[in-house]
Amino acid sequence: MIKGTTSDKNLSIILLAATSIIWGTSFILIKKATTVFAPLEVGALRIFYAFLAFIPIFWVQRKKIPGALWSWIFLAGLIGSLIPSLLFSWAGTKIQSSLSGMLNAITPLFTILIGSIFYKQTFTFNQWTGILIGLFGAIILGFMKPGGALDLNWFVLPVIFATLLYALNVNLLKIKFSGIQPLVLSASTIVSVGPLATIILFGFTDFSYKIMNMPGAFEAAGYVAILGFFGTAIALVLFNKLIQISGPLTASSVTYIMPVISVLWGLADGELFGLVQGIGLFSILLGVYIVNKK
Image 1 (cartoon, rainbow, N blue to C red):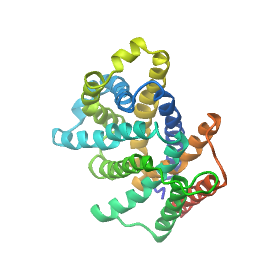
Image 2 (image 1 turned 30 degrees about the vertical axis):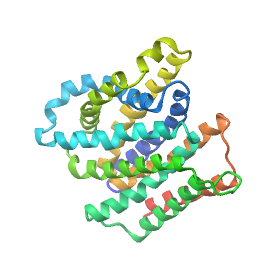
Image 3 (image 1 turned 90 degrees about the vertical axis):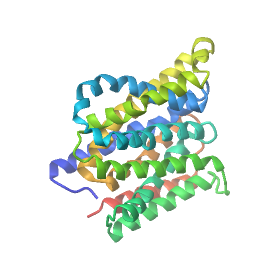
Image 4 (image 1 turned 180 degrees about the vertical axis):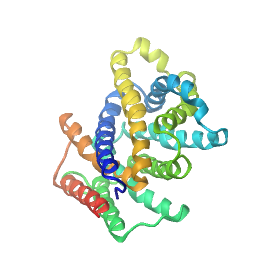
């Protein structure tokens, strides 16, 4: 539920829309990039690009991060960026990009469960109802084919695990870093895991060979550059700001709107979308309305 002043509410809506559009586009970019690069290469390269973008900002703002918080900063970088990036890249080689986007709707349920169990946060009956309706839509999308047949695709599990990590990170950011500016926080979390992503990319993959020898490698790297600079760096700043002014539940609602964007990109790329997917998306959007209704 969006709380605060009118200006905060308006800013929350803008941030929610912008972040949803950016992240909703990321799944088709992952799909395009994995036609050339392996999932580990795509995930690590995405963080590497964001790392490069944030280094100058971090260098200027680094003293604003208390030394005692650096272990938490590194944890936030792992569960909020690096590991999910690798998981989504892995899933992107096996399932439709639109399905990856739609399955993100599970995040708010995990956000509520983690917030209520570990952080003793309270939520209204309406919020619980909205989350469960959205989850119902996500289950339909994740386990039903466009024609209605049951589809037990085990490669949805990396996406589901990534949403759990996102939910953990959303609560962590709200509890531990509410007093840190979003830009400083985003730069710090990415810079903390950037060296690890760099080691993975250049030390444990064939990225260097592929970029020099494989046809289409530069184009694929361009898709990942968009992912890194916009889908990770810029969107992370917007998302952290959204968490600070609206709370973890409203921020996690980004993952309700993202499916619409991912479906549109999927349709443009020839992916299937049927009545079952329409029902699932309707359930998700209805859940968003109920969650944010006063």
